[in-house]
Image (cartoon, rainbow, N blue to C red; front, top):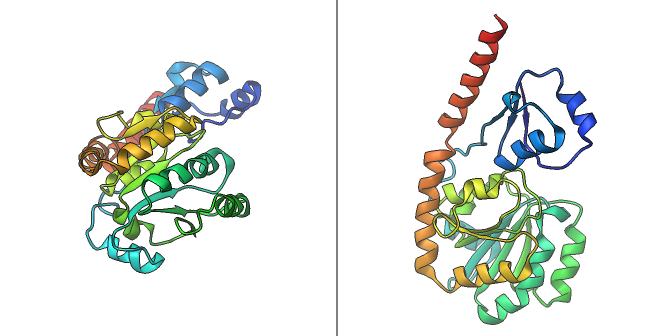
Length: 259
């Protein structure tokens, strides 16, 4: 069995050749499953959907996390802290969010945006921050090996990806009790039920992204409601136990068929 985690398109003939040795191909989301069946042309009987999981014991709400964030990044006590957790690569959509930030800051000057991650777009994004006069409000926070201890201190996670296999950072934030605004790219709608466990916007649409962020920033009650619902959904549908059980079922089925 092989697991496919990304929804990037590849030549169908090459993908069919690559997957030929495997009895089963696991897709981590409905978007990846659709790519395998409808574009690559795999027999639907060979494709199973098994979502990635998050350790809800590690990523959990924790009141002390806000103090750790404030100490690490010098965040004012009255700030609303927004996070992005993603590689600094084009398809993660950082540039789209930064284009929206001047209006967001004009309406909510207390906002601080932390972009966690590294990648080849770091210098370009740094220039974009400077050109838009966002230096006091946006910080490229780099890679952090203590992200699980910091994430619960966020007020909001924004995931503006243009393409996404599933969205592990979204799962982690929801598990940590953080409200999420995310694009509807790839498998993200498998995670978030719009208006029930987070807010979705059309991938690549700056107006929809800005509207979702502003709505969340202006409504603390909405943030708290969606954060609670998000953690409940992750615990119910994206637990390590559930994922492990599904993989065990598929392996047992394949082994039984071969014997």
